Length: 144
Image (cartoon, rainbow, N blue to C red; front, side, top):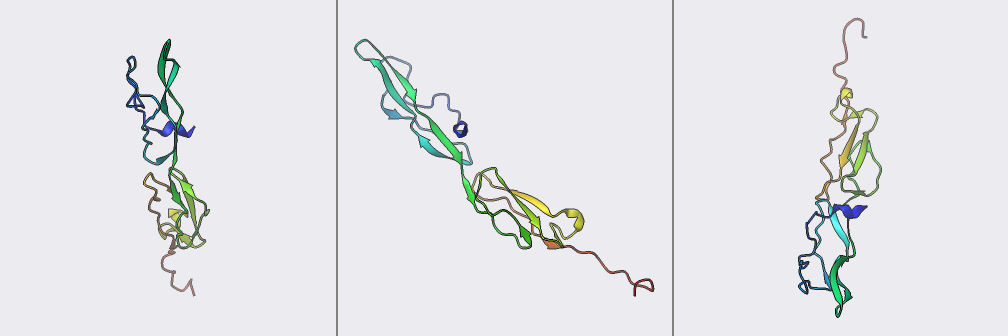
């Protein structure tokens, strides 16, 4: 459940006091989300329960939901292809270099990379797809 991403604060309501008639009721709790998440819903609050004339108590009710932030659509990298869908915190985008290109210009360096969406709503820096260099062509009598 996404709500597990809010910060673990021992008493989520600053107004929750362990004593008779001390807790302020009908108030909302302050909730902060972990980095990379934003607060979508917060209806955590202190509610009076029971009968004031006989016995009453305050109880925290409701829930808070934190969801991952969006990095938006991934950037294009020249000479590569990728799925053009919105990405959220901790999700990755897989880029594949076009035929004849690699991540470092050498065939041994590979053609695929994964770039992750970060907590600050930006993507990690991606490497460029460069033309594969085959080196110098051999010369001599065997190679006309």
